[in-house]
Length: 225
Ligand SMILES: O=C(O)CCC(=O)C(=O)O
Ligand SMILES: [Fe+2]
Image (cartoon, rainbow, N blue to C red; front, side, top):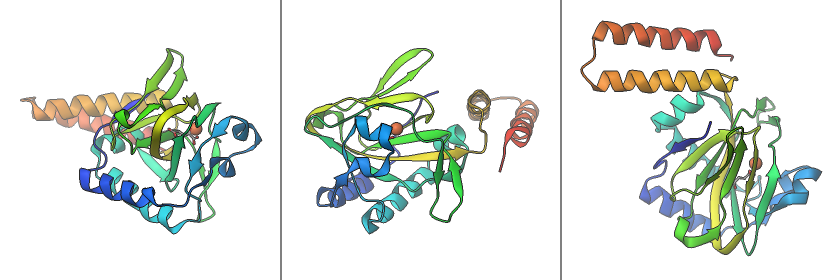
């Protein structure tokens, strides 16, 4: 399931992040992947130890914390601090699957259920740079407005096509969800969305209450902490 999260960043925050990244010190993106990833990865990243990455990563997480669809779709339990990447001059990232288990800074581990890319460049600023996610329905090319994000399964084959003009800036990170199974996560999102629609309309409040109970009881049954 791919979920589009519109307007994660407001204009002011987006402008501030872009200004900070314009003068940042970038390093080879191959530093954060294994041998297989290194064969297909051609991009730049902010180094993990960079204080700028930490500060901007906090801004990204704070913006996501205010986004209702992010919570409804991801049901986040743990999140890896965001990284920032830059593709330019033919830079690309070939088909790969993200590592299943990642180390958090506090020594705990994170199972990467979901990956998230937050676009920081507008589509007209670069050619190429589509995030292509392959699933049982085929390949989906994603290129979003600056400030928008997409959630996709970290276990899906995905790639970023070569950026042949301009530069593509993005933040990316991984999420361990309270609900590991994608079908269950999708069911909860659909139920949640339907309930929100009923609440916004003129629905029978007793029925809405009952459905809300069903939602929470399914979440209780399916969530792992
Ligand atoms: O740049 C992107 O949109 C995705 C990057 C990616 O797939 C990765 O770093 O594993
Ligand atoms: Fe990836």
